[in-house]
Length: 350
Ligand code: KG4
Ligand code: ZN
Image (spheres, rainbow, N blue to C red):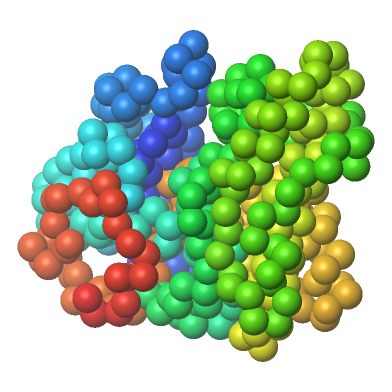
């Protein structure tokens, strides 16, 4: 099964070709970071227009690199949501147009399902069931994943997502957009224990406390801290390190609790914050101590990309969406996009 994957939900145009027998054949990404940098965040209209400019050339490039001709494709998977409406529409339009022309199916993929399944792109792929820690710019969720389309929410953030907290705190520290990687880099030079920052929702964890997260209070604590002192270089690095340590402590503690409570032996980490080196180090240490395994996507597939969408599309085709055969595009989830889309509604067959 040969699937072209298209990701345009936010500020990255991602395209890939995935073969269910041979794995990932080619992928390419155009990041809009430079485009949005001067505005301090993503400008939705600029994002849509850039996807329009980049997408078709990227599709041609990836097909060429994969050695695949359009008629060889079995299906086209695209991110249907959640994300920016205009940006999603670009991917949906190109995917549906191409699929219609070729007489093959267009499959709308849930962006978070893409992240969730991205560790399966690796050679050492985890078997189902597993616990997934999904930490992106828009979401922070712990999930029990029993199979494709079989997701049970264990906990999620009540306010800011982990990546969002990184980005907002980075902004307070005068770092650019997106701030997560820059903050993590600055934190390397800092002392994590110079400032005492809260570990939200951790105190009550114990045996019964819930697995939800809250990061907005931590950001407020950083605001207060920064108001009280002059910001020399070392202080900024120490605040960054203290903040990162607090977020990572909470993510690790709740992930360990999720593993203990479900009795599962595999943890999968996905989403942009999964690229955080400190998070990986503490999760690996916890896993060694508690006797479970952790699986990560390759660094380049932690943040948004087309490969995870192609993979999720191929897996959907192999299971529930088997009905999506060549010449039957009417059966796909359709041209509409879903800027807001709850992953928990994604049960098989719905
Ligand atoms: O998954 P992703 O590309 O986009 C969404 O679907 O939201 O995640 C992007 C998020 C941003 O908030 C970014 O700051 C964060 O992931 N991020 C990081 C790191 N790399 C990316 N946060 C902390 N440490 C990193 N190394
Ligand atoms: Zn994402």
